[in-house]
Image (tube, rainbow, N blue to C red; front, side, top):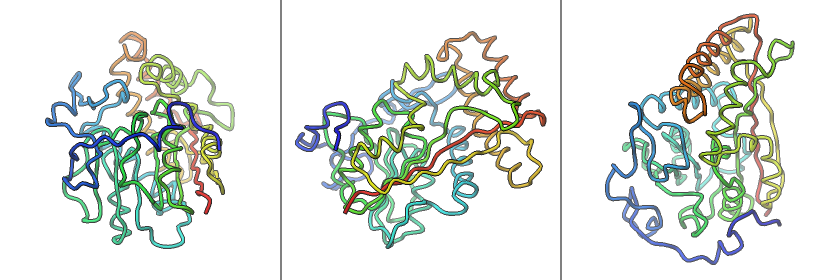
Length: 331
C-alpha cells in the first residue's frame, strides 16, 4: 500500500498530545484541541464570521448566513441526490460508530444520530459552529484533521463509516485524510465521499469556458485556492486516492445537476433552482472579497451580475456535475 505524502509512515507511532476537550471532559476525548476563549475560534471581516483556529486553512465564512446555505445544501443532497437516503454505503448492520469529517453545522451528523440511535455519532470540524442541543448519541468535537504531527483522537478508532462531503477539495493533503480514515476504520468498514466538480457544462453547446460560473471557478482555483492550499481537481481523483490508501470495492457514481431554472421537467427545475442558490451564494460570498480572488471590486460586481443573468437565462442549459465515491476497508 502506498504511503501518502507527509510524515505518514511515522503516524501510528507518533505520541498523542493530550489536552482537554472542547465539548467533554472525559479522558477518551482528551486528544481534541482545547481553546479557552471563543474569541480564538472566530474572526470577523466585512460583517462576516470566519474560523480563526487555523486562519490559513479555510476561506469561507461559518456564520448564520453560511450555515443557512449549508442547510439548503444538506437537504438538497439528501432529498435529490441520495433520494431520501443518508448514505450510499451498503452497511450490513446498524452501525455502532459513524464519523462525519468536516461536519460544518452538523446537519448530516444529527440526522444520522436520529436514524441510528444505538450508534455513537461523532462530528468533527475546525470550528465549534454546531448546535448545543443534540441527540444523546451525538457528539461534536474540534480537531485539526490535517495535523501531521499526531494521530487522530482515539475516539475515531473502529468506525463503521467515515462520511465526507465537500471536504477533500478544501484540505492541503487529502491523501492524509483518506489514509487516516483507512487506519481508523474497522475491517469491512466504509468510507464515503461526495464532492462537486468545479466546472459548468452543457449538452447543447450553450455553455463554454466563458460562462460566468466557469470564469468564477477559474478565479476560485487561482489565487484563492493557492492561498488556502485547496485543490479543486481533487474531486476527479477520489477513486485513485482511495485505492492508494488501501481501500477496495471502490464504487463511483457521477451526477449531473442543472444550474438554473431552465429545465421543463418539474423535478429537474427544482434541482436547478437549489443548485443555483447553493453555487451562486458561495460565489457571491467570495466575490464580496475580490482581493482574495485577485480582481478589482468593479470586476467582481460585474461577474456577480453575469452569474445572476446566466442562471436566469432559459436559453443557457448549464449543468454542474458531482461525484459520489464509496469504498471498503478489506476484511
